[in-house]
Image (cartoon, rainbow, N blue to C red; front, side):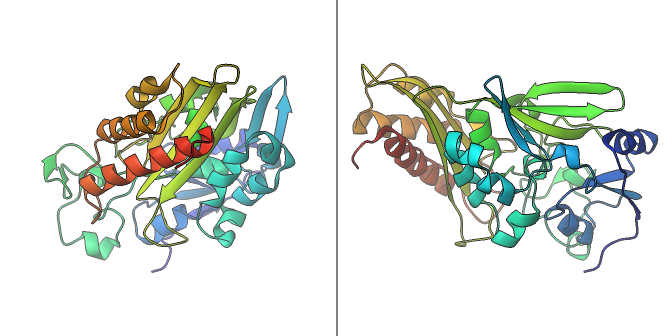
Length: 330
């Protein structure tokens, strides 16, 4: 497969890039690392008139901490994130999550902003244009039917990003810029639960940075995923957990559980977390919370993996991850 025709634009500043998007609204695609977008272009899932490169926007790179807020530029690559001393020291779970993305080659190109803006996926949509042409246009491409569920006017494509779950658990926010100004959204509100339009970013906006509070004392977090291949694969299910223990009492002070690969957006298992808040972490209680987490997701069969299997894997990953962070013997 070859790329479609487009005009390549390489603005020298963020202001110039935003002006291009505003002048050509709906006719542009923004490219950073391109590890996901280039595949989509080859499959004719997008046919932009202009491809706007962010390669020269150096200010959108880098990692810093100011006043107990960690800020990560959206053009920071996975490899740079993994190697950053600040992240290794204060957010080792984020290092683990970034290592789960693709291969070393992918991580040298893929950016954190691009990963958060990953498109949703399904077994019909993620095919070549020739393959898709055998059936009417699907809902995600502007049609009226979802060929996976045979339902009308709704897209059930699955979000399967690796970084978003842990960043949501760590209460991260994203900054979006346009020619009209900037806005900041909590990351859990960035996603829409709409398979066709999976996030809140508009055609005229660029995600410029990620912000999160530096973890308080006793806060730990990590991410685990189950995938079909040992590498270079999206998660069948991924689970992120951020846990804060009250050291004097040994009870759970704060807990967030976020699941990817189980819906059109990352899913927070709040009922499961409630079962453990204020409690001493015991194996039987953790197992009960893990079972609850599996009931909180509503996966649709957008691949050959069944919803039942996804729930089983979710329960196992939640239990394993909480036990690991809480230092509980298996």
